[in-house]
Length: 99
Image 1 (cartoon, rainbow, N blue to C red):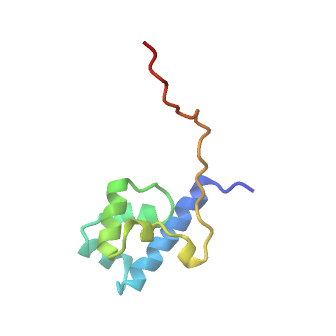
Image 2: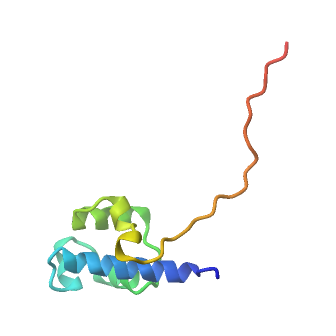
């Protein structure tokens, strides 16, 4: 069964929310305020409504004191990992120069 993209975004939001509370924040609003993250944007991320930009992911990881890979690690919560399939690209081979 193929998982939808939105399911992965929602899982990320759940993981992010858990990390926020694990770091001792009492509310999501407190986390947003103390780290200068717009509450509306954070709410959309937590609810799986948007894909966060890379710059936002870096800011979130820094605010939580975790690495980018830890922020995106779904295995640590016994949740299925997001699997990205590699596209079938033609192999690159070096061509010999012929004079």
